[in-house]
Image (cartoon, rainbow, N blue to C red; front, side, top):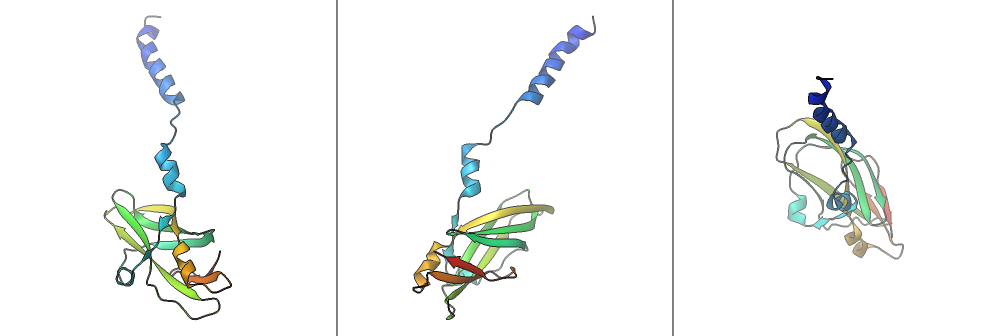
Length: 147
C-alpha cells in the first residue's frame, strides 16, 4: 500500500492526459475548405517554382482542387495559382494555369495536401456555352470548367 499512494497522482495525470480531446481551432477548419484567389498576372506567370508533384486535379464548382506532394514540412511554404491572361481560341475556349510553389525550408519530409483555388475569374473569357478548357502543366488531362 505504501507504494501505491506516491504513484496515485502520476496515474491520475496519465489517465487525464489520455482522455483529453482537443478540437481543431475554428480558423483551421475554415482554411481547409477556403478557395484561395487565382492570380492573373503575365509577369508572375513567367516565374519559376520549387519542385512539387501533382497527384490529381479536379474542378468543384468555382474551385480548382489540386492534390500535390512535395518535400518540406518544417518552414514557410506558399502555393499560388497563376493565369497569364491568354485565351486559347478553341471551342470551348481554353486557359493554361500555372501552379507556383515557393519553399522556404530545407526539410525533405514528404508532404501531401489538397490545394483549392478560386478560378471564377476565368468566366470573363467564356462564350455562350459557359465552359472553359483548363490546362494545368504537370497534370495529364484537360479539365472542363462549366459554370
